[in-house]
Amino acid sequence: MTDTPHLWLRAECKPFEKRTALAPTICKELLDQGFKITVEKSPERIFDDSEYAALGLPLVEAGSWTSAPADAYIVALKELPDATTPLTHRHIMFGHCFKGQDGSAELLRRFQAGHGTLLDLEFLQDDRGTRVAAFGYYAGYAGAAMGLEAWAYRQLHGAAGTKALAHPKVDPFPNEQALIAHVKQLLAEAEQKTGMAPSLFVMGALGRCGRGACDFATAVGLPETAITRWDINETKKGGPFPEICDRAVFVNCIYLTQKIAPFLTFAELEAAGPNRSLSILVDVSCDPNNPNNPIPVYKEYSFFDQPVNYLPVNAAGCADLGVIAIDHLPTLLPREASESYGRQLLPTLIDLRSFGPVWKRAEQKFRDVTQAVLKA
Ligand SMILES: NC(=O)c1ccc[n+]([C@@H]2O[C@H](COP(=O)([O-])OP(=O)(O)OC[C@H]3O[C@@H](n4cnc5c(N)ncnc54)[C@H](O)[C@@H]3O)[C@@H](O)[C@H]2O)c1
Image (cartoon, rainbow, N blue to C red; front, side, top):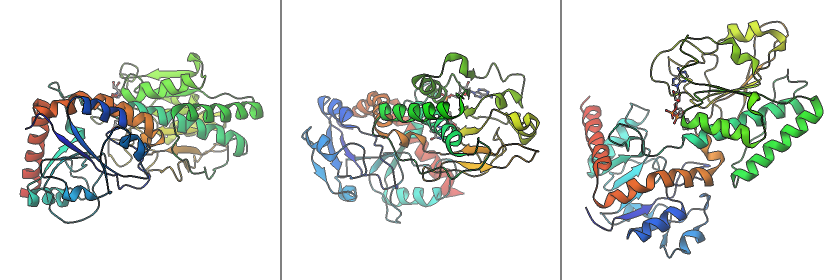
């Protein structure tokens, strides 16, 4: 442990990933706390290298973390580049390897071989087990934006909303004002063409993602009467819920912990008939391959370069259902998502100076999982 931890901001290598764990404003606060920070250059990152240089931070080449000082914490959000080399440092990132995901054992073996440590961002939890930082708010915000955008696009280009469309690629937005302006414009054009305005059904509305989804709907001018907010109380009676078919866009934001009755199946879609309002489903929770998925109407993820998959609803005159199931939605707003995440993480990062209980638990989790996985 040291009073002046050294953070080495690794350049992300996942294609299209513009977010970062350490926005310049967060670096500034850490510098004020006496931290040492080295930044790998990155043309992809939403923050320009010059914003870090302006803070007096040393810029180094992308990928040079492999030769960082042994005591540096290597900080990033997403996976390491594919390799088999042993990992010697302490890495702070989303490892996606504690729940048996593909490639878990290989990654843990690399840490074991190099005596390195993974301090997984997903497992930085307070003493009540709550995550200290999460991207949820901007996932919901982006999910509602994508859903309303797809709804408007369908009104404008989808032969009165009944024809499957190839929805164009969506690129990240420089900031949330630009995203709001873009969606507002499309909604206005759709209303001018068809006289219709959308409505939104948010499931899990009291959670991080759910609040983000509702806030986006309000930001683009949906009146409160056009937003249905459901959470655990409203679903107590058990699904399915035909009410979902009465709203134009359904955004599912629940945190799934157990098997529950489905929220929506093809039976409700078919029963709603040709006058169904529901046009776009956005599954922010995005559990298509989970056997307990409460929306068992689709199996495929979608991606920003082809965001909407259209599913036929096999009943006379029924429109297809557009499905958005993107598992990295906050990437749509990399600036705000990075700032918000970094702000939540900051007190815990500062706590690296004493390697407090949050870090000790994360380290223990890594040791336990490594032992269990590599013994199996
Ligand atoms: N697609 C993405 O890019 C992305 C990004 C971040 C998070 N997520 C996922 O979004 C999900 C939600 O995350 P969060 O941070 O908002 O969680 P959260 O715990 O803050 O909120 C979840 C909400 O769901 C509600 N809920 C749970 N079960 C319910 C039920 N049966 N009926 C109605 N409401 C129910 C809870 O009461 C809570 O209000 C998680 O699965 C998370 O992994 C997806």
